[in-house]
Length: 233
Image (cartoon, rainbow, N blue to C red; front, side, top):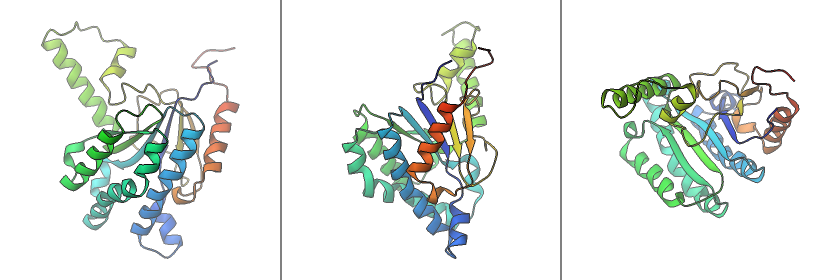
């Protein structure tokens, strides 16, 4: 069956636990984890991945302390200040899925600038899921579809394939490979529809320690698997 690898999604877990092992604050783990985004993005681009979707901030992460959330909101500026030039040189396009308008104005400005600056790039898409939750996405997609039917823009005949057109990832297609770091074995409300037939790999390594070689090993495991999509050879 199909063995191409186009869309990789990663749940970047374990920053806080990594920091605790270093006897550091959680913020230090988030800082190191943000820097590691650059390493894995560059590795993915070099391997010919079309889309790399990273779970950066979930709709549930607002429940964390105000101090931690405020720090997380500052990380996009640190990341793009440090690495935007290199991402542009690699022809990488920045994209965002989630609720843009709930971020602080300064964070919105940083993200919009990165998206605008890279919009004409034709290489890999580095897609950040921020203030994102899959159930929320699916409910909003249903609302949009229902509105189209009520407004007579279409008939009430939605197909499974067409439903993807109403999702935030409509231009990217389904996820082929999902990786979660730090040993947790759950999806945490991430791309539930898009991962219906994704291969999933859960690794013990915390995100700040997840190296390009670890990423390559996950890709190797993907190609070693037999994707049948419910069929048989």
